[in-house]
Length: 266
Image 1 (cartoon, one colour):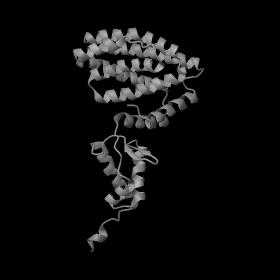
Image 2 (cartoon, one colour):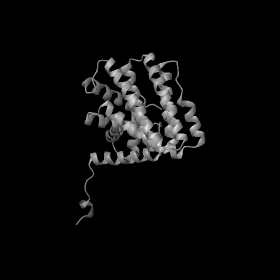
Image 3 (tube, one colour):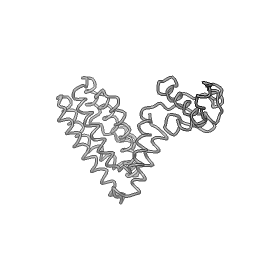
Image 4 (tube, helix red, strand yellow):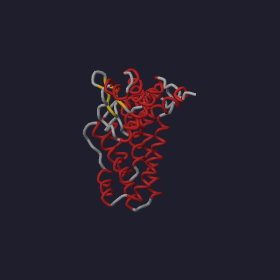
């Protein structure tokens, strides 16, 4: 029996799968760095010994999964960024499960509560001092300044928790929460300044619990913080004459998550 005859023929689809697997491995290993430009399709085709159409098929899948950004007229660029990968997955979950805004807030609360517990146990004196510094900040400039101040506190908290996975998940969720709140508030500075002032005292109290190395108290305070945040967002919904289960709100959430995937923030 001819041994060559027993070897299954490799179809075009399987070749594309092999190229996809190889490029994915090289991206996730860092061999193809985040932000770097992929070789031109014709060069990849020559290197793999396949047609340009086969390479194009593999690159299309990489783009759909968020690992590559295809820019027409410029080329394809690697997006090996944890935030982007998480946001890509989250966008799919939001679409499939019809996830609501408050469902995301619940998950964010759980993550931040755990982050507070870890920070109470692991934060260095310098990290606690940084948290103390940003806790009471209430920027008075633009809406962007106010949002930046709100982000800084929790970004500093996640660093103090020393949990990279928690940080990545929580950061993506916060970007979505604040983006939706910004949309609902129509960018009104007075609403954002009021919210920041209302939440500042709670952040300072949370830092007190962290400095006391009290994980349970810190988690409880995060729950209170989020309850207040939910009430603020609820008031924005009412002001916008929207309902939590309004299809327009679901569409807004989905579109924002999709935009977050398409234009990842640093």
